[in-house]
Amino acid sequence: MGAIAMKKILLRGIVVLLMLCGISSCTQNDGNIGEWFGHWKLNTISVNGAVDDEYGGNIFFSFQSKTFCQTMMYADHGAEHRFANWDNRDTYFIITFPFETDDAGNPLYDENGDLVCLYEPLEITRMSMGENVVAVDYLNGNSLQLSMTDAAGDKVVYNLEKW
Image (cartoon, rainbow, N blue to C red; front, side, top):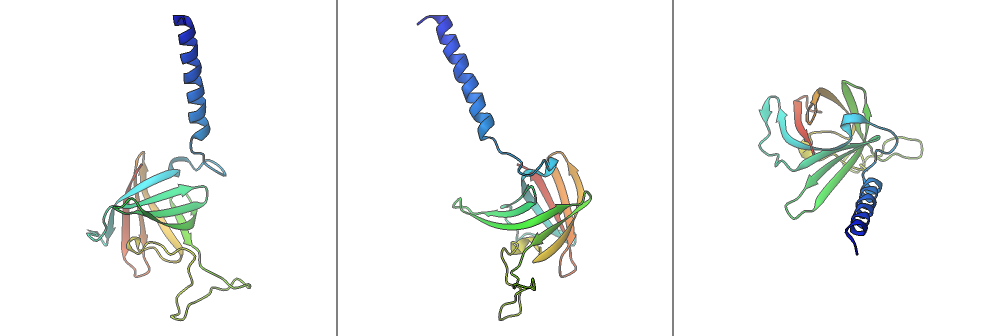
């Protein structure tokens, strides 16, 4: 086989490979959400100005369309996912962890008086069932700081980086 024929085969292979990469790439379902799309590694959690030493640096926040996910990674490569809805309001957003309701739309409570959860937020993040109003302190390229006041009245600050 001649050099020209080999070049043609190689070029066709490269074109097919590029097409396959484009087809298999991740998409943004239901519209472009801009810089929010994807995974953000939660580097630190601070409470009332003090870094929470209990946090192990193993949580990711993910945004897609109207879905928010907290993912806790484990050393054995396992993961735990907690899902919520999120609504972007530019300088803040609302993350809503849903709870079970009856046919009339009223919340359901367990025998301890707690809401029956569909997905509870990860406890270390100090987010609550229902609505969490999260301020966007800054979003600068791959660096993000979010803050909120938790149910106990403490100021919680999340420092994240894009992954």
